[in-house]
Length: 239
Image 1 (cartoon, rainbow, N blue to C red):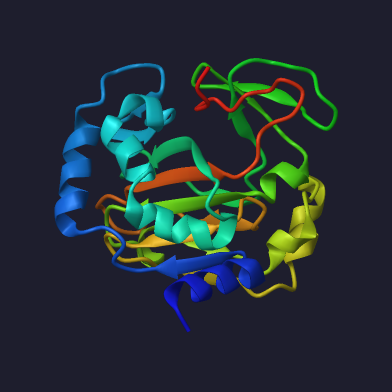
Image 2 (cartoon, helix red, strand yellow):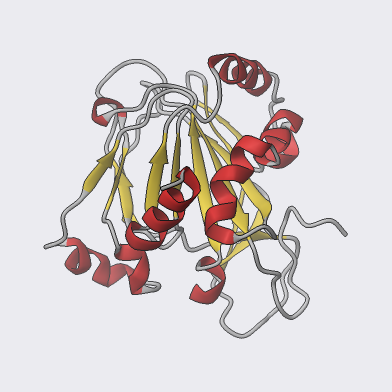
């Protein structure tokens, strides 16, 4: 069985897959240097060091190049097919001054260029000066997230925890999430430096605070294979 089939089957069945060794140590080092050069703007959050950067595709040409690289395309194509494109990039880090717990949730918002009232879209919100909206589940079901790890990430430093198969439940109201996961086994997604976690946005996931003092840097890339309706445009979409 080929790696492409394994990836496609895993994501379809479980909502996620782990692939080690996607990018080299040299590529990781170059990315870290590029991330250090990102200026101080509204998308950068600092507290004892940078711990989050939104709008990463706009802020870093190196990350945009990575999102369109053969190494990443080989991960996404078995799930979304050949006609897909990056729609969002975010840097997450966990450092002693920004070591947060993330409760169980689904990723249910997308970044768009401007507000267009369309059936099934809402509520709307602003994050780092960018407009976000919750789309219908049919949009989220045609998306895939690739989380590229720039550090070794195990349970001790806040690795993602997921509920396998929960992506098949559609959009779950927040008040029902606790009940949905109560009797469902979770899996810790430990990933090595240079590895990737692939996941569907509707997969229930959470993370605990890191118990070690080092970094847990992750480049989070969202991809989509569908256009938005009613004149809505992805933030990354060219005019």
